[in-house]
Length: 325
Image (cartoon, rainbow, N blue to C red; front, side, top):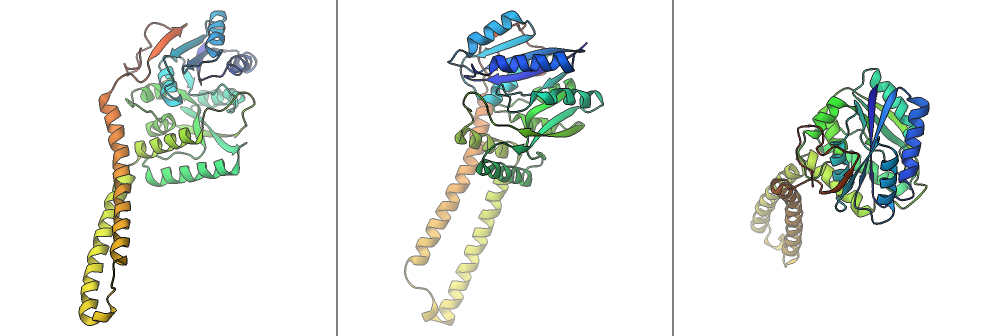
């Protein structure tokens, strides 16, 4: 009997964790009776009743594994660490407990996987969200795909099933802030895209605010492309050439028609503020890369764990040894 692992991160989701577990269990009982379910929950330092509910669920069902983080490390770091405890032949990388990504697609993912695909990726082609958010996401994917060497299919998130060999390739990445969907895309393998409708949250409050989404977007851009650095070089070269040409033109105009040459301080002020703004932009881009390098070089655990339930003392070997508390 093959095992399918499902990874679900959660933070203050007392209204959703049990519903999520029961829904997935029911789907497996009805549509995937020949497969063993392993459900891995990663609690990101919840302060409500979520930990108590998870403890009760784990005590009643040994197929439910729980990893309690010492604090909130963010959804990507928490999920990446939880993937280390997935022992299945195939893994649902991230099924949010709010069930905005439909678990009803899991049987279709499994069928496609059994037919030979290494990755069955869900794509949120339709979203139950505002036009502003939909437009912002579209702009983000256009920017990333224009700048990156790795193609990110628009609307494909972490809700996807990957084969065991893909998981092992993913876990070999040593990244302090893993952008999981980008890492999966960079690994390659045979993939199929499954479109679906991304529904609005029914219970609880979303933890993904504008600040968090912006941080994730910047991480994706700076992690998978060198384009911002090349933009700095190109823009600096263009400005330098434009300054030289402007200087030559000013000298020529001064000797050809002295009265036509601009007088006053306006040109100097405009040029000064323009170049200062460009320099600050360049420093900001360099700072993003330096910050990422600093975090990577400094090292430390990806996630500090407080406790584990129904989990072996050591995770299965995956080529990555960090992440233990």
